[in-house]
Image 1 (cartoon, one colour):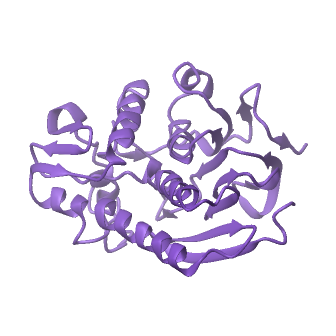
Image 2: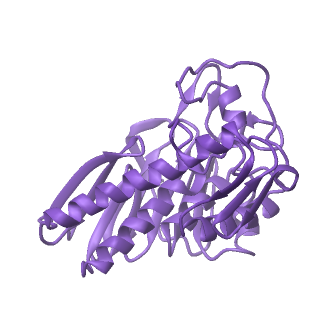
Image 3: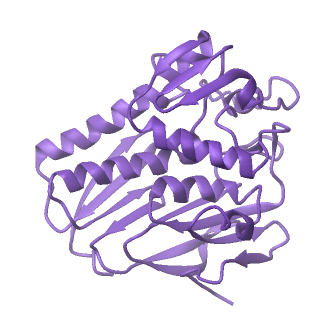
Length: 290
């Protein structure tokens, strides 16, 4: 793998591990800026922090101004909300809290599954301004980590770093590093791979029902129309030009067939289902083991 002798910068942010790999060590000032950018993002978008903008929206309806990344994020969520018939929604936070995935990580359901409110009934998302007519628990987890990967990539490029690999606990963006071999983790056995991808110049993101799972069959991928965990797909992988798109589409594959999503989005994909079968796009860059 061509990045073996490169330098690694590792840190924690938004509750996960980050590793940025570059040909030469990053200057300390840039390292500080990257960590600060993660903290800024968390302070705006985290539903697990009492001091975030998202927490303010959960307490009080009103008009809230978010940073510049809110505009493309809202557009992406709006398109996915429509193509999934409301199953994928940024208003899923209340449903997650009901099942125990709350700010205190209680992991104990507080009642039966709660469908997310209809977007059009409570939220107007216009560019960087979000206006809520009632308290809402926003959760951008389906696209947020990928979005932050893209934001850190922009910081690196602005600093003149043209070759790098960003690894956000398995969500990857490769720029100028040549092919990077990435194993596809078996959804039921983290020590086993079901295939490999040689990633070059694109983002690779994955979603799996075995991640952030708790209780009796509960996990973090909920259908917004029912508030219940999805049961058909168990793991997905996507490749796209941006990590935000790849991240969001990895979740969307739990609700809509990849071929349907490709009518609207430019990406390649793999879905593994609960019965052990798999489906993938014709141009999927990976190799599956037999």
